[in-house]
Image 1 (cartoon, helix red, strand yellow):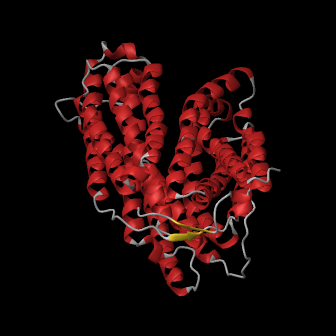
Image 2 (cartoon, helix red, strand yellow):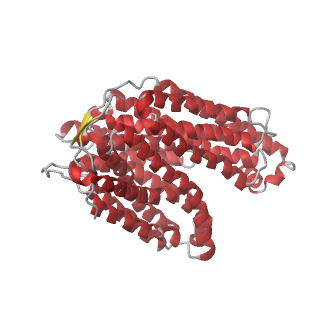
Image 3 (tube, helix red, strand yellow):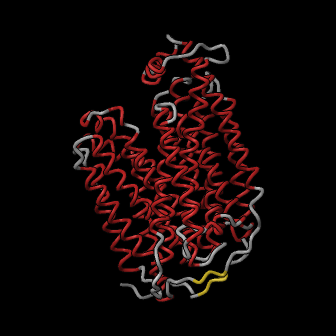
Length: 503
């Protein structure tokens, strides 16, 4: 075990990157394998819930685990999260039906809800503002690599192995990450007897989960949506009453309402809506309207995912030179600039043009997301950093869910109304168009209806991106808190107290 402080921090970051890789690769590798998995397990009508269940559990538990990390330290919560995630991964490989797979994906999501926010909190503990942005640029690159490696690994596993290995591949990675945290993340924490707000955490999880069920089921089942919204509202009211009553609440409402954190989180939420709109509808436009192959459509998104870590790295190197707020504003400005490119797409446009817009949005997200989380982390001390970090991640996840629902509603309503002179197109005809891009010439009417609906969706996405920039102007130039870093110097290589510069 290396004793030199300079050596320990990179090893801890390596463990963090391994843990984050498990989560980041899940989306792309499972997406690649799900058609074959659904073919074996059946219940195709539950297909989308394999993905929704993971996101639902992750989002609902993020805030609770962030608070627990502030109470009991980062390492135990990370190890618990990894253990839950690996248990879910193991069970997913043994799934015998679609409902069982959905339940096991819920377990995976609970583990992910602990890993992602607490891992980023550890980075905030160990590094100063200038160093932190650079390290978070490395973490962003994990998502970029996973977006490329996931589909490739998924295809190879499905071709040569059982689909169970789509999930079991996480086990050795998770064990290595856990071993890294046990060996190198040694926190000097004074244990205090503090009562955990279990009831508050449970009510919050129920409220968020019910809200996400309602958002996911909009357009499918009115009864389900109404019932889920009622549960979300009731649990939310009880949660607020509980938080006002207890001495040590699970969610410190005062923390969430601080201007720095509240504005940064709203900006993050809207940026999440923009990104989900891009990743959902751009491939559909490239295939269904431009008549390109799925490979080309994937390329238009790949450049966005590659632009993200590049933007994050460039942002990190300029935090000290320009400050956090200007970097945040630059990223927020790039989002509507990139989104405006899609407003000029037409049936004869080049996919390279679409990729250019996607790249600009990727750069914008790199600048914005990196600056936002550093601003949030730097505005609080050690005892609140887990909660503050988790609030930012929660905002992005919730934004993705809201964006998918809102932009999906714009698309569906436009398609059903047949605006712009185009007749309403059936979902079967659109599916055929997407499966066989060459069929565009044989069905120009469906192509016209799809193009019009997606064009309105891109306008909605542009408006959300423009609102992101407008609200980013409200983020104040706040002086960062002098954080008391609880990871001792011999364990992490940082002083006990790190007075951070102005954000």
